[in-house]
Image (cartoon, rainbow, N blue to C red; front, side):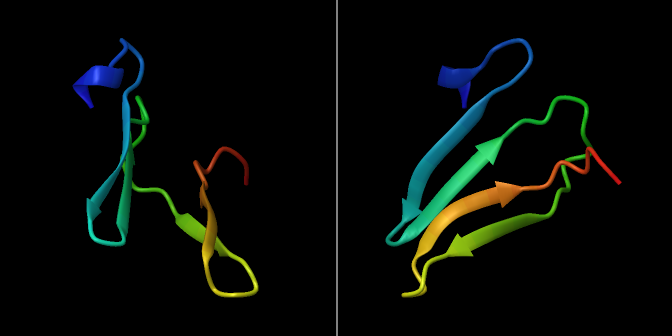
Length: 57
């Protein structure tokens, strides 16, 4: 994450182990706990990752 560090954010997206992708990112002022969901296609393959930052009610 040091490579992507800026004063307000940093992130890392990498393959952790075989078939395990890992995405880590800072949220600056957040508490670090946000609901995150995988989107799947009709074959059950992951197509997207969505994190809800709880910005709206």
